[in-house]
Image (cartoon, rainbow, N blue to C red):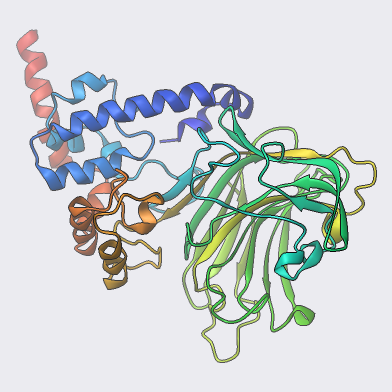
Length: 435
């Protein structure tokens, strides 16, 4: 089943998002209330609440009203509708695999100074020791609502002309760069976002990832993952890249381009996916609107003495920014700036209980849950809040145990024919009685 976002045109999706977001939240609230009143008990409720956080559960599988759901035992819900038996908020339909939402930001609420789950890079890079952000860039990053805001269900990062001289370095634009270190990181899985990129001279939008701990040393030894970047002056392509190497002078760049005839990332919203797979050496696949355009399997510079998947076997955090000029953006002389609009960012892993998306449920995940037990948190799945209720508690421990024992397959697998027949039996008998 497709996510509702893919059942409309990009333009319709943009117009309807604010209303849809409010409706989805109300629907999920009603559904959760129904689930909590069911008869299967605390663990069953926790499992179903986990399923309910995925956007379509109980809303589009069968023409049953949410009121009716409260009258149907959970047992029958699993039997009646395959949607209840798998994680249904999935990446683009063409991205194969059983995926569970691990973290997301829908940008339905928030302000420039209240983007929960994100922090800011500020200035021109001089305070970080990389003036011009290492690329001779022409922007000064701020956290002003002029440069970063949430409106109409989108995150907007805006580059606007303004000359600032700081630490002897002059820039001619202000913009924004937000990131998630110490707030969210992931190893392996799917990272997806939907965006409309800006067109214009010198504009350089990017969604990318950097290592949380730089386990193998400074850039580029510990790697860099570029999900998507583009040149506003040439709005006919996007590219995805990996950076590795032993020093900035020996940096290795693996890249690919998506540039089919007629493609323009600046005239509407498109969905971008990165599939990052564990292995020896592991692999990366880049997609636009479900179309695979690049695969990298090894070939990067492995840090001395490390396994073939290094440096891409450690947690990476997210960054979103809109740069101006520099080594990639090109001349920005006379540019009026532009806006990078992000509809959502979502990440996926493939196992319940796997807090760090390393492909296994183990004592590392238990340690994460235990550390946060009893806390009110933000950050969801990655800190152990599997049922998305804002707390790490006994329900989450129960869900961890389910994942550990592989009982979480209930969330992935369509019902057996016998279960389907048992679930349908009460409705068949009720129909016969009425006739």
